[in-house]
Image (tube, rainbow, N blue to C red; front, top):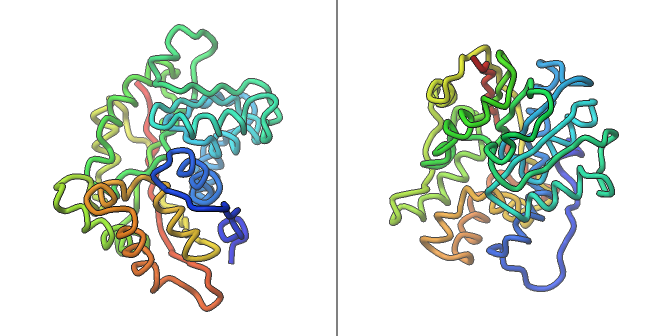
Length: 284
């Protein structure tokens, strides 16, 4: 089993409410974020990210994808306005004095939007990434086209822009889990699971005024040390927030534990094969 994905995650003493944003951000950084590392690596390899690359990461979260690019020699900037707690963790990882400081000192993390970078000066970015996958819950791509369009003026003409989406449900074991638990959100008629569509990413790129320039698929299995870690990791994504709002945290925990049962191995670990798709577009 891949040690990068399945490990003994740190346990937190005492009662813990997963509604606590700090707890969720830590669960994301310690458990869930690494699940897409194979995707990050595949994209960086294909685009030859290294010294001389200026990368802008949209929705950078706690910064693992940026740290990976920085370790290849890229100058990285991350923006995220969805979670101040994740942004704080990204700063700890990437900025000088942080525990995971990269070999270069030109990283920048902004708790905001691409508009907050306007007028900052410096060379244009030649790579823009939006690594948060779309195509798992209704409305999860809302606003992404506008964000990409606002980032385009910060990039050089012809710069690569990377979008990511979930693969077909039949190739994503986690989709079945999300669908099962997401049914709790049906009374809200919003935020429930929906299957990824073939042209999701192309439609977003077109709305953002970008030109498609290739795509690929990458296997990203979700592996966890145990069911508890799997529950914590999946809840940290925010994909089940609507279910929590429609039911309650205890009920969602119960449903999620049951949905994960078929994916539990004899040694207690949880393993779910998934495929994610990425689209490379270009600024015009």
